[in-house]
Length: 365
Image 1 (cartoon, rainbow, N blue to C red):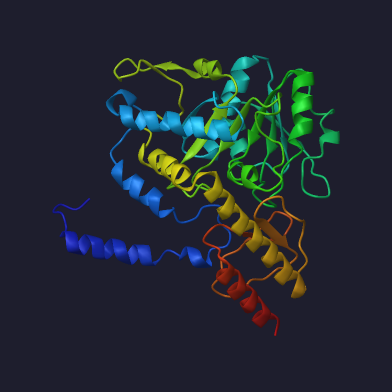
Image 2: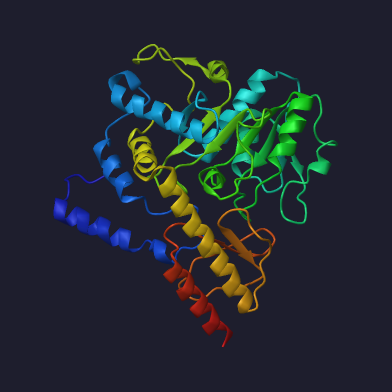
C-alpha cells in the first residue's frame, strides 16, 4: 500500500488503462453474462452501499429481495416459493445440496448429477463430503434417464437436472426426473441458472419447474439472461421451512438467525435484477429471448452453409459446431468434446453474427 495516496486524476487514469485491457463484449461469444441493461446499471448505482446481510438496516432493499423471490417464484409457477438472492448458480447449488443433506441424514450420502452438470457441483460435493455419481448423456447431450436406476439408492440425498446446460444448451428430461424423485423420495434440484430466464419465455416452454411435483428447488441467475448486474442469483425452494435447517445464530445483527451462505450480501444487484424484470415485463423478456433464439438459428444456418455442422440442435441460445478454429479477434470456447461453443446473449446481435460469419468465411478462403 502507498505511504501517500495518489491524486484522483492519476488513479482513474491508471484504472482506465486497466479497463482498456479488457476485451469488449462485442467480440466475446463464449460468455453466459452480458452487459447489464441500462435500468439495471441505474438501479445498481442507487443501492451501492446496501447490505442484505443486515436487512433490518435496509428494509427497503430487503423488500426488493422479497419481490425478486416472488417474481421469480411466480415465473416458476409457485408464487409462495421460499428463496433468497445468492451470488449466482454456484452458491445456489451448494445451498440446495446443504438442504438435501440435512433433510436426509445418512452415513455415506451421494448425489446423482448428469455428465453435463456445472463444475460447481464438484465444489459442493467437496465441501459437503458427498459422493458425486455421474449419469451419462444420450445422443443429444441430455441426461440419459435410463441409467438412473443403477445410480440412485437409499443413500442418495439429491438428484440434479439441468435446464440450459453450459456446454450445449440442452434441457434435461425434468419430467422424468420428477417422477423418479417422487418414486424414490429423493430431493430434486433443478439447475436453471441459465435456462431459467430463457425457457419460460419460449413459444413452447419445456416443463421444468414447480409445476412438476417432484421438483424441490430451482436455481436461477438474473445476471445471465436476466441482464442484471453481477452478482445476482436466486435459489427458490418449494417448502420455505427447509431453510430453517441452515440457520445459524447472528446475535449482533438486526436479525437473530440467518440461513444464507454469505454474510455480507450486496443489495445493489438485487435492485438491478428487480429493475429489469419490472421494466421489461413478460412481453419484453419474450422479445429479448426471441431475438437471442433467432440469432442462434441464424448462426447455425450460417455455420452449416460454411461447412461446419451443428453438434446438436439446442433447446436454448447456445450453439455448438464441429469446428476447430475461430477468426482472429473473436472469443469462443470449446466443449469437453472439442466442439466450438457460442452463446448468443443479448449483446450478440444480428450484426455481430453476420460479422462473425463473414470472418469465418474469410478463414476458409
